[in-house]
Figure 1 (tube, rainbow, N blue to C red):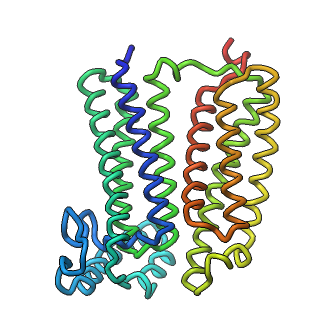
Figure 2 (cartoon, helix red, strand yellow; figure 1 turned 30 degrees about the horizontal axis):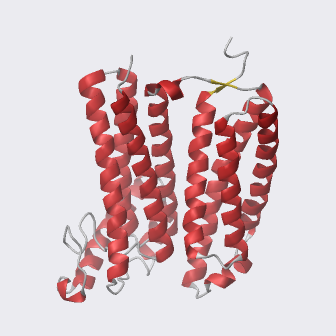
Length: 338
């Protein structure tokens, strides 16, 4: 089945919007703006958030804290139903969960822009799903698009849980990995509908093996990165400044750093072989993004964790994940291609 250029282009736009949500979410994280809007989906009970304290609802701290407590209790019950008794107990007994921050217009609008990107990405995915339903009706792709749309809804709901729990670190980690699943499924859809992406990449067997190994390590690296970030959240609550983080972080930080060099070595071999043989643009792009990712990582470790570099580090990691995901989907050996 041939899909129109407009439909393929629109799905690429949806992917870009999903990435923009990741960028905006990372910026929210580094600026501490996650509680800029204490309620969800509205912001201080309004669709257009306030710009000054005069526009705030009366007794907003008490009211939103009470509302969040109800949501936290309900979510804790859900966790218990999954057998996560200790996690639910910690959540309900965490004194920081119900703390309300003072109003800060900059943080409020930073979080609001993040939500706007989420709204745009979600609606783009909805339009793409309806477009496929009306015009193409290919069952397998409809199922994938439908699952991804549902996951986007779950992601939005879980965003409200992140807010309700006052940014408990593990909820932010789950929030990020849900975004990666959504990106992977969107890439799969693009792979199926795009004439350019539908073809296979003919790779030597060792290159394909290296790609899979690097892909697995990258996913593990992203998990370790979230562990490092969670440790930073704890250090921040303990009063440590940005310049002290690198010294205080534990084993996950050192494993994360060491594995980065392992990926660099493996991809360097792949890039060198690629330049002597196939000269694939995707391998070149992979190596360039990895280099940028490592540079941002070095700056994070040795330049007092500058905030904007944290955003860059996550963005490069998700781009790297996207390129590798498409690579493992398209990569085939000569034997496999027959």
